[in-house]
Image 1 (cartoon, rainbow, N blue to C red):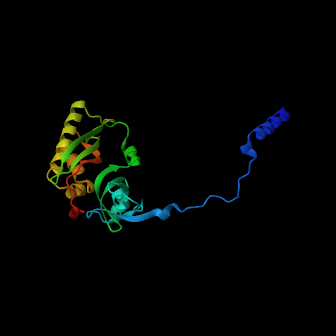
Image 2 (cartoon, rainbow, N blue to C red; image 1 turned 180 degrees about the vertical axis):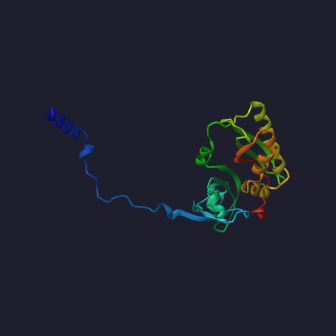
Image 3 (cartoon, helix red, strand yellow; image 1 turned 60 degrees about the vertical axis):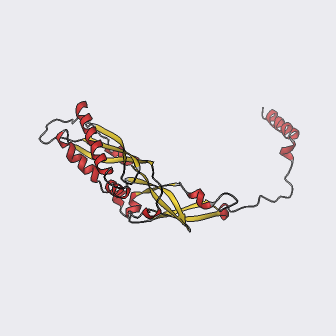
Length: 239
């Protein structure tokens, strides 16, 4: 059996000239540094963050009609809120920043979204409670249209001996309505800068907990996610 396999292999090598043909010259391919044609730009966060230097990004050098600064615009960066605020307590949130303008070797960004990390969301879900989620589209005073997602969980009533604390469907509808109203009241009366500061300082979440107590007490209320749907005409002074 082994002789037959060896013979078949020899015949295959004899038929295929490519297997026996050696390379001419013996020199390998010329090694080219891929970063030789790249430029490094610093990414700058908006003014309302403590640490404005987010990091750096790489883009190909300007060649012909392909301009480096134009390739950088609308690029989205995801950064941990802990890095932007210089505090590890905020590591459960990620902030999205979109490149709006390029000055020298700096990329100026604007707020583009925020969301909870997956591990934080998983840690909130437990037994014997009701998960309540609501979302609404709202417009800021300076023309940004945001889609805001809110999440909350029912908590145990005072002096209650029950092991579970599930809310009725009618109570869930009332809580969702109150969630949307609180978000609208805060967002429609503020510009984007003040709205982002409210998101980061849990202002909206605290008011939702207070307002919904009359229906059913809530715990672990968070702005789960914020998406920027529409933006007004760009103003560099606001960065």
